[in-house]
Image 1 (cartoon, rainbow, N blue to C red):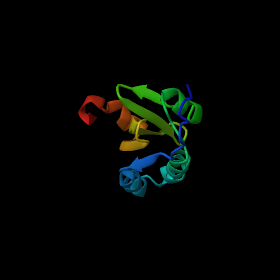
Image 2: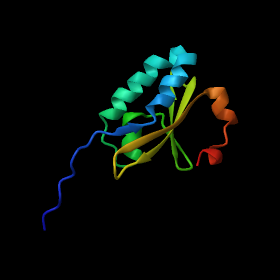
Image 3: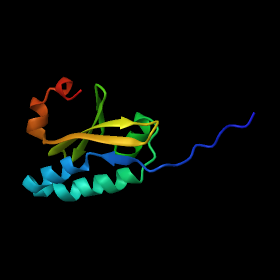
Image 4: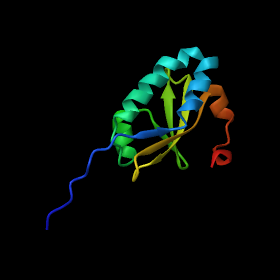
Length: 107
């Protein structure tokens, strides 16, 4: 019985404006955030381990995927819909802000 070939699809990033707004007040995160956007758009993630292959420092916290940017000075909180290839940006925070964040309030 033949198996269906998986079609590569680029990830679609939703709420990118949250990143753009954040880097206006924190300009040193702009270059790492743009790098993350570029890499993520070209990714074809199917599960957490495939994200981990792309970004080795990504963490899973509840239903969120948390990326370290700029040497862990900033934390990018996302939701990922693997079936449809969507990455939804929930927020970008300084590491101090993230430490105070209640992820349940983002759900």
